[in-house]
Image 1 (cartoon, one colour):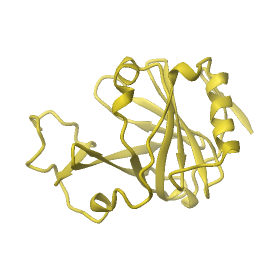
Image 2 (spheres, rainbow, N blue to C red; image 1 turned 180 degrees about the vertical axis):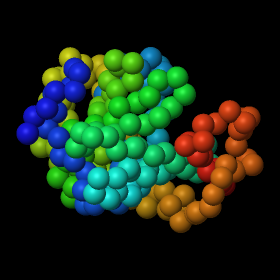
Image 3 (cartoon, rainbow, N blue to C red; image 1 turned 120 degrees about the vertical axis):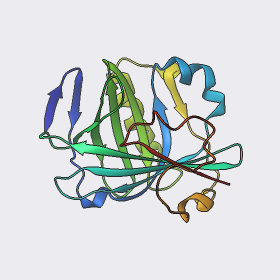
Amino acid sequence: MRQNHGALKLLLAGPAPGFSGKWFLVGVASKCDYLREYNHQLEATTMAVSASEGKSLAISTFRKLDGVCWEIKQQYRSTKAQGRFLLKSRGSNVDVVVGETDYSSYAILYYQKLRKISIKLFGRSVRVSDAIVGKFEQRITEMNMSEDFTYYFPTYGESWLSCCSVQSGGGLSSSAPWDTGNVPSNFYIHVWN
């Protein structure tokens, strides 16, 4: 069923418990200035999702940067619309919409903040089929973006981030390289070597 959420016309495939688990960030399309300037520094990124029917998504994003493993925890809060979530942040909130997924191999998510849209392709493995990449690129075209705004993440194999995913703990690590006093209460970052 197609629904219209502002500028987004999406096939909503609401995340059922089957959405839970490990996802690899395969690609992103965005007109973000920072991404345009620093896309050469993209690093493989993994997302662990805990989902239940009709509830928020608990998201842990893992990435290595300069040999340090980072975990960013966020809550995508459920809304009344199936497949649509709200990520609260300072300033403006981010609308997150699961545009398309088959739960077993890929998911296309839309992120909208202040009328700016980013589209992300996630896979259950580091590589997805050409047909899935084609679907992703079709969605990009539908949002009036081009390949100039599309970036694919490097693949290092599925075990490259095992150092991060086996770690656990709470709070913000004391090794964080900035003042942690202004971090929003729903945003957690764990850092370890």
